[in-house]
Image (cartoon, rainbow, N blue to C red):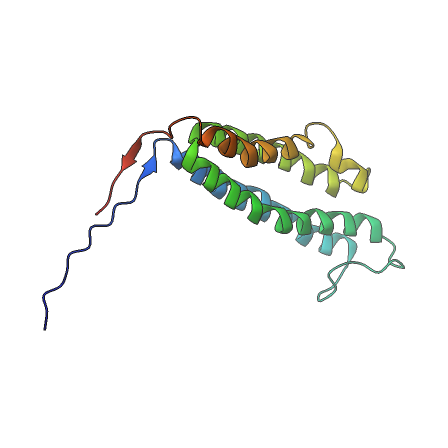
Length: 161
């Protein structure tokens, strides 16, 4: 039997990449779970039983419950894209990506709060700083693509092998 060939595998992560990972975890636990908790509270408050995802239009509190449910559903639709963008952008320019990710996080909290508001409903999703999440997402997409070819990535600080 031949001797095992040593495999030298090096994984290089730029300094500051941990901030991007922190943003991903923060968004997942703070935004997604908070929105899920809002839905659970709204189910109890408005008496919407499982397995119904949304309240029927004939339900007395359909607009209020559906706004909360839609805010949570929107989080589930948008956060996977954020996770990928945050981590890919963080490989090129981690500090800029982390800053944009934090803006995205704060704006997303405002978005959920506004959308789930029983007083403003879906119109509340654009209240305050909520639209900044779109701007932060544009930065996460475009900055690494524009800057990646013209500048060096951050220095690597981790090497395993």
